[in-house]
Image 1 (spheres, one colour):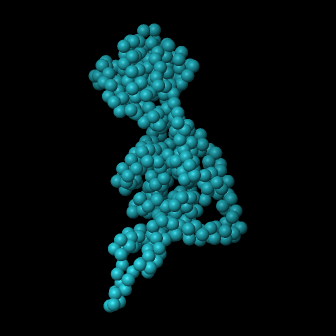
Image 2: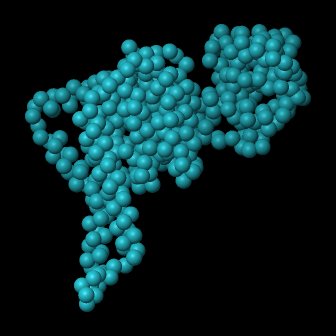
Image 3: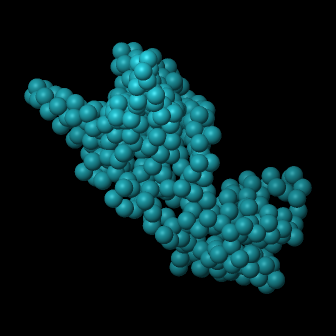
Length: 415
């Protein structure tokens, strides 16, 4: 049995509600092997008494029990917490029984006798679902404050624009100078030319002898430079073109997110990254240019991939809050000077050509916007939709180990 990722599970223990001692021992033994904390209750009444004293992540419930059976326990549990995650044990696997079980709002069911490997997969999915839902709730709590701060920032930017200050233009020029000098592309090209000048030898006929490895570097950086110029072309087109919006069901946009991100799939194995895509359960209407919003979401996922920890996940969420459809991209980062976005830099990272860290070149072939322009264009696209864009640090408190994450969020107004 494969041990579950302990960083992607809730803090609360699992509650096993089961009257038969041998079944309780079996389930708790499997959970112990998976290093999942658990507690047991002999019937539904005891389960409710335990629930009044502490919280649980997932409930594993047998239907046939004395004192209070599983049906009554699930009803009382759902009255208290409609979102409670319940796994039902049943010895019957006919269609009618399964349908009746799922009507109770349970997450999944487990057929007796219990297959340990199958049970491990089911509990794994249930715990990760709880983990992701807890994160989504945590994100929603932060959003109201972020909305207020963004409105203050927009008012400040407007006052600067009206004052005629040229500091923004000066900053952009300085940022461009720094961006061009970093990493591959333009900056490396000048260094390579210097290397050729200092190492090349001239033949009597005037031809030059240049080291093959240096020429390979020149060719490679020529391609990167072409890609950067192509990115500037994309930027120019976006700035010159109008946004053509169309009334769209929010779920239609959310369902297209995997398609927006398909080009990065072949790169995920480089860092052993998994992307978790969202579903939108609530109906809503938005006015969007799907192609342009798709470019923005793709840029955020690429940005998350570039700076996320190896062997981690990129989690994408979609939900409705404060009159907006909100799509959030979360990635874990190192908790050091290189990881994350300091609060003092949140407003600067969307400025043209601005970079906190040196460029990451592993995905430059699929980046539509280089030179530190990616987040600038995301902000531009959202502005054209009367939407908002945030990117900031967030601490994940939903597990026993607190991790530092970066959260990118786009807000699209509902119609």
